[in-house]
Image (tube, rainbow, N blue to C red; front, top):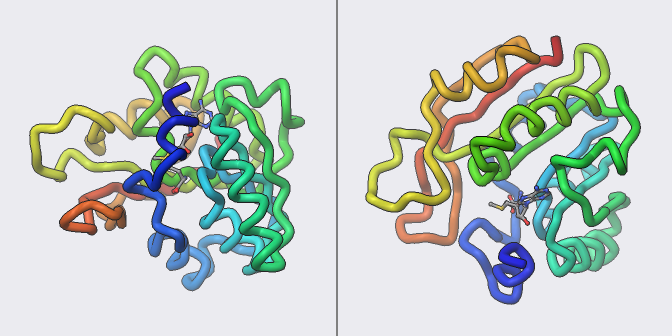
Length: 195
Ligand SMILES: C[S@@+](CC[C@H](N)C(=O)[O-])C[C@H]1O[C@@H](n2cnc3c(N)ncnc32)[C@H](O)[C@@H]1O
């Protein structure tokens, strides 16, 4: 499987520290202690950071290798996180509804295929409590270059995909930190509330 293969090495998003954007959301109080889910959690840096900051965290990812590394990392850092191998498009098989105050997504949305986007948004909506918040970081259409994947989203595209099920608080310019050269890539941060 593609995602297991990429974790045989160090993929460009695998920073070995949390995305600064999500750290800032903790620091400015937009993410408060509560039940949090990290979808496409990879090797777990963001999930572990949320747990260290008082959240009760679940992380899910398709890639077995990544989830097993995340579990080891959490133990090493004395962070309690419930990591599971799972497909975000089938979270109804894994997680009860109305369970989480917060869902975070660092680089998952922009790898989801167009045809899967409706089920993707429904699955996130389903696991959030009423009034629960979704924070999503993706590459933006302001990011230059010829590469096709992951796709760069426009604000209008993000709005049209999420507004049927969410009230959008903001979509703002954000830095997507990577191991590429240059490291900092242009992204959008979405903050949205389950409606
Ligand atoms: C760009 S990586 C970001 C990983 C992590 N959030 C981070 O910031 O390091 C996208 C992640 O989503 C996972 N993924 C892709 N499709 C998925 C799906 N349908 N369900 C769950 N995880 C998925 C991949 O295995 C990968 O770990």
